[in-house]
Length: 124
Image 1 (spheres, rainbow, N blue to C red):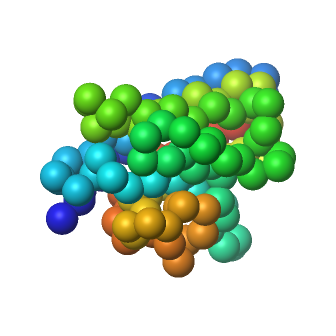
Image 2: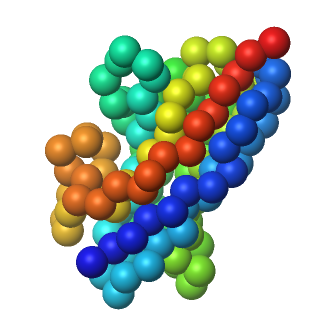
C-alpha cells in the first residue's frame, strides 16, 4: 500500500513560482515511477511530469517544458514539482501519483495510487 500527500499549492500572480511536494509512505514507493497530473474544471486529468524510480528519465508535458522541474528525494520518499513562470492556464488541481510497477507514470491509466490533490491558482 502507498499513501501520498501533496502540499505546497496556493495562489500566485502570473510569472510567479510554486513548489509542490508529495510525501509518500509505503515500502513499495522506492521502486515506482512517480507522476504529476492536473485537472482543471470541466477538463480531463492531464499528464504534467513524471520521473523514474531512481530519479532519472524526467518527462514533461510540452507546455511546461523549461518552466517546471520534477525531482525526487529517494531517502525522504518525496517528489517535488518546481513550477516557475506560472501562467493562468496552469490553474488546476494538481495530483501526484505512484505508477504501477514497471510503468512510466505518464498516463492516468498507469497510476496505481493517487494523492488528494493540491490547488494551484494563477491569477492577476
